[in-house]
Length: 295
Image (cartoon, rainbow, N blue to C red):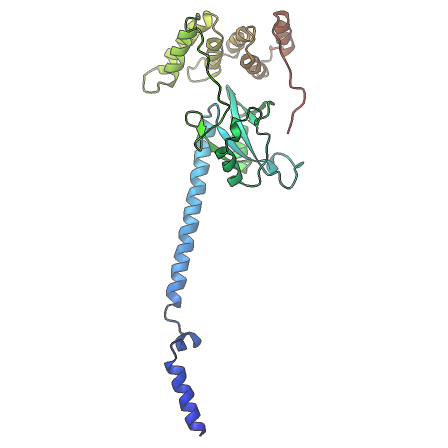
């Protein structure tokens, strides 16, 4: 009786379809482990590649910044006085003066990167008061350091004023201005040559056009000429000449010129910013000051 029971149990164990699993001899176990390992390695490699691509792109955009570049900020690395839900924030490049990059911070905070991207899709950048008016000035080296620490963890450059299929600034109906203002056409030509990297000596040609425009007292031409003097590409960097032309534009009530003069003045020991402001007041230029920095 006992022998029959043993034989029956043995037979059942050997013929059961899952007997190999019960005995721990799954023939596919090793294959599955290898497949899962390969898949994990592929996922990690793709994630690392994507992260490295974003990092390299950010480094390139920092080296050659442009107006309206959008920075993704981990604001926890900028300030400790934040609420638990205040983690991430946008910033936009609004001015470049020499090696100084001016950022305006967004007035809204986000929990994660996806919610930031969603806000662009929803058109938040088109709200007139989305970005703060306070100017935050950084050297390019400071921007680079922020990117290395992760404080700036992503940068995107809009194309035709659009990012993620949406405009990044309020849209206004453009009023056609007088095309025959003295110096305007020269300035337009200068800006065209400045962008024409396929033309030999395009930078030097742009400089000459800006010089003509500035001498004709065209405000934007004076600002562009000052920018050229701040650059090292023509090997004639001259902060004093840059200050001179920025002042000429400032005396015509150019807010951009006033802000740029303030930045450059800090680099010239003989420059007295109070004298500059007084000259603007004497000329009847209406100026305002940001007295308190807003985080």
